[in-house]
Image 1: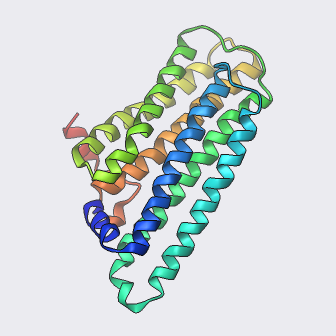
Image 2: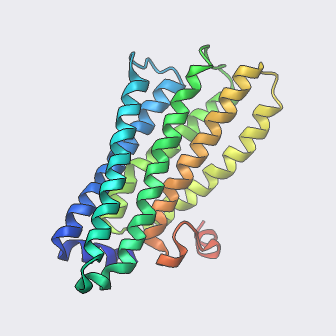
Length: 227
């Protein structure tokens, strides 16, 4: 489906501009996600980092509204009705990207109530591994989308589904740990936010491998048989 979408973008100047704004949304939300991780794990985040995230999130929201408005304007011309399926796909994708910004912002906000150091143990180490996996998957997503790389998208989706399962198991392990209430809450929230960011990244990648009516869903048989 996305190969056809790309051809439409490249043949239509109005849609080229919309595509550029979507690419900018991906860049901005990746940046927010990385900064939020630095705040959450206390990786020497500079003062004002959360304010920076808020300002970037506002920009992402404005880009979403700009894209929606441009799509509606584009489809108001009868000769552009052939592009309806692709515009519908884009409307779905921009919502996923906007939600990534929200969850990343929430991740950084955990430090509003948890100001201590995270434990140096295997559970926190696994959260760090999940962070790395999510950031890596997100970092390659713009290129996969831009070039409609089907096989690469499938590989990232398969890995991402494993990350989601790890998140579910880790939440249980954290809940059963001897941590104090604040540490438990911080780690559970961090894990869940990374799971949701991961999920929305996979939703975006689904546009490369799934037809329009199955965006945000995956053919389990196709995913599993290639594992």
